[in-house]
Image (tube, rainbow, N blue to C red; front, side, top):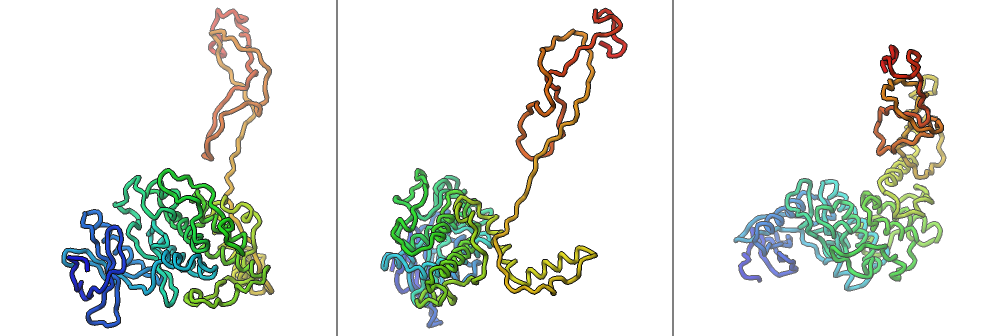
Length: 452
């Protein structure tokens, strides 16, 4: 045992060292009175103020993220001068160790683990927490059940967090996003989705999507290698597109949630099953799929149809409106949803038959992706030219030029869609000099009409 660490710690007796980190050690502990209770005790070995603050914040964040795929926190406190956190003990190991031991994972296993971590991430994001270090080393896989659990919220960030430093790079090289390499303050929940995409790629290929490991800040994130280039075969091309979307350099082009990526993958494999007759729609006979309690493909066969534009453009599309369209299409493929829309439409007109939805006999509902656009129109109005008389006591000289139509006059380009009251602009070539009748243009009498 490391010298100085007390035992017992609270009600737990320390037994053996099971892991080490840069600032902490993890020990296996047994409850003194509850014979079956085992915990992982994380002991902070660094005692500087920032480390203590981060350690306490990590425990508080994990304690409020109650999710079956996030490691639970049982207790936290200071014992014998050491700050300790009692965590759920997972019989198994990190995903890193699993892949190092057996190489790349079978497709069914990788997708099952991916689905579980995706739900954990979305739960954390819904609670306002960004993990910032999603990597195989921070994903535990339970040996008997193949349950995947997200752990180590040591550098996670909450809204209004005060401990993040500008221009400090945090995370695991090779699994961080382009914004990770610039500054920890630029990292958002979309950065977690990028990292999750790298994890999925790593599970399927045993390698990262680049020839060289991204090192901050000089690394240029180019187009990731395809899984086919890594030797992964029998993968639908649309699955490649989805992973490339998760790995988009522009965060706006990634999926807005991890579940959106899961749903899209499952749609792809439903279509792949139809065309290839691969038995992906049946329960998978392996420990990972059994642990998830569901089929590899959970999406219904009559779901949203593929969209040719999405397939062609892939990662170049901004994902948020696409996810909204998928959700809307998913809602409208259910007969009850169509019936409600018909009823609502009927209720808006006095001459329409009421409760029209109840009368509709829907034999089959299939839907395409429904997109919503905000149309912003910039229009310009130019009124008929009006004569404006001005005094010309100075006898100004005017250049001779052809008179132009009002629509031929070039105006400054607008910068936005804000309303502009406009102004007046003289028509080139429209100036006329009228000689005053009182003195015939000699300029010796003030004109009574224009005071010129």
